[in-house]
Image 1: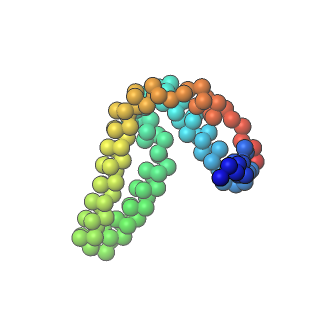
Image 2 (image 1 turned 90 degrees about the horizontal axis):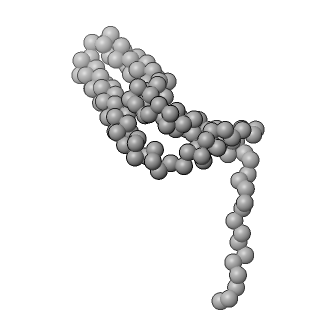
Image 3 (image 1 turned 135 degrees about the vertical axis):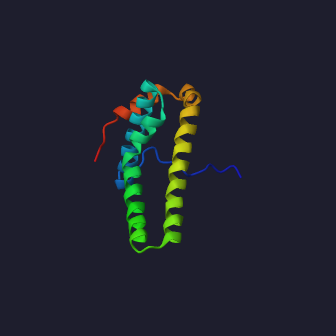
Length: 124
């Protein structure tokens, strides 16, 4: 059993769509981390980052609520409205929790590596 392992792990990742998407996501998230490092992570900053998601949710649920209200169905209207309210409250709680623990997270991050990832050029 003195055989050597013939497997050698790859040194570079293949350059495909998924890899470039991962690098793009890494760049976006790195810029957000730097922004939070500079100004501090607040609930307002969190909501600014998730504006598109919040608008999409409001439109999506707003259409359902409008249709249910126009057909005079109070029980489904209340259920969908409650679901939307629950989602918004959960999102607020998450933003508040992340803002609370941000000082601890920021102490453990290697800001030089974060800056390097934010400055990385996208290769297509």
